[in-house]
Each structure stands twice: as C-alpha cells, then as structure tokens.
Amino acid sequence: MASSTMPEVYAYEDIDGRKFWDGGLMSNTPIKELIEAHKKYWEKRIGPKNLEDSFRRNLKSKEGKEEKTNGSLKLQEQQQYIQRIPDLEIYIVNLLDPKQNNSNTIMTMVPEDFDGVKDRHLDIKLGKGYDAKTDGLYTDYVNLIERLISLGDNDESLKEKINGILGEFTPKRFITEEIKRNIDILKSTFKIVKVIQIQRKDDDDSISGKFADFTSETINKLIKEGYNDALSK
Image 1 (cartoon, rainbow, N blue to C red):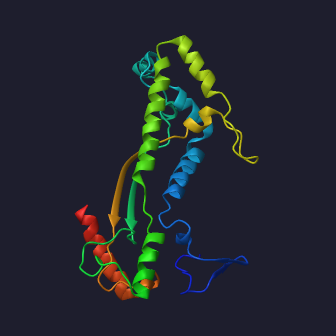
Image 2 (cartoon, one colour; image 1 turned 135 degrees about the vertical axis):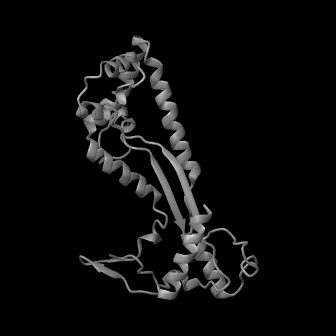
Image 3 (cartoon, rainbow, N blue to C red; image 1 turned 180 degrees about the vertical axis):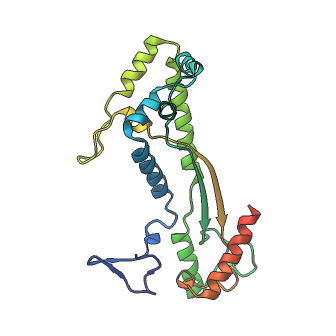
C-alpha cells in the first residue's frame, strides 16, 4: 500500500514492479470514487434485472396499491419490489484548508517566507474539498427525472412513449464504452441526502511538511482536535 508515501519526504512504494505515491496527490477527497464504489456495490448485490424492474415499478400506482393490499406477497417478492440503490450520507474530514484561515493572527497574514508560501501552496493544491453544489444538482436531476416519468402513471399512451425513450441506447462517448440504454443509467441512480464536512484548521506552528508528520504526538493531537470538531457539528 502506498498510502502516506509523500513526494520529497518518503521513497516510492514498489508494488508489483510499479512505483506509487500516496493517492491523495490525485484525489485527496475521493468523493467521486466513493460514489462510484457505492453504486457498484449495490448494483452487484441487487442485480441489474432487479434494479430495472424496481425502477419501472411505480409504488404509487393503483396496481401497486392493490398488490400490497392483497397482502399475499412473499418476503422475497416484497424485497424485490422496492430494491433500489440506497440513498447516501457523506461525512468528510478535510485535513487541509485551501481557504485562508482566520482562526489565528499569524495565518491571517499572507505568507512571504519560502516555507510559508510552500505551505499555502500545498493547502490549496491538496485541500480541494468536496463541492456540495455538484452532487446537490445531481440529486435534483434524479428528483426531476422521476417526476417526469411519473406523468405516465395514469396515461397509457404517454407511458408507452416514456418506456420507448427509456429503452433507447445512449450515445457512446468512446470506443471501449459499454453500450447502455437510458434505463441502464437511471436504474442505478440514488440521492445524496446529507453532507457533513469537518474542516481542520492549521495552528500557528504550521509548516509545509505537516502532511508527512506521523509522530504519535501529532496524531494524538489531531485525534483530540477531530473529536472536538465532530462534537461541534
């Protein structure tokens, strides 16, 4: 594992003949990777057929209400009836602060010494946090699509047209991309219902090499600060 192997401080980690640095250099707050892993895990666990059937089945339709009222569905059928990828709550701890820290007197000044400038450079470069607006927009799109599709619940002609659109193939963006239908994209959608971020602030003794400090003293200090920050949320 190459975690914590930071450039200029530690040597590369050799894994199967390849050299690696810490993955945080590419994605220090790997929210996209988390969302993709969440989707793939539930796609595999639920199965593509069950996901598609659940997406097409409208729980508010009369047919669905009658089916539930009759009450003789087996447990397995009931589970398949509502199987969708669960909504996601995200909790983030940002260890680097890309914004100017106003919590102390020293860091409110623009750094001019070499180490101070390097420290701010690394904070900005590696401290790019999570953009809640992007995934908030994603959730809004999911809500909008579901409402538009539900317009066909009581109109068979419109419902047939909607199902035709859902079955259409999406354009391929590159040659190796898997062929997908619109329904294949929509059936795996889920909502991000909560985002909690805890932002660590630098102290007055911050230096550019702080990201490579794994001493027990520093780790215990960060644990204590993180605990207090979490309580404040």
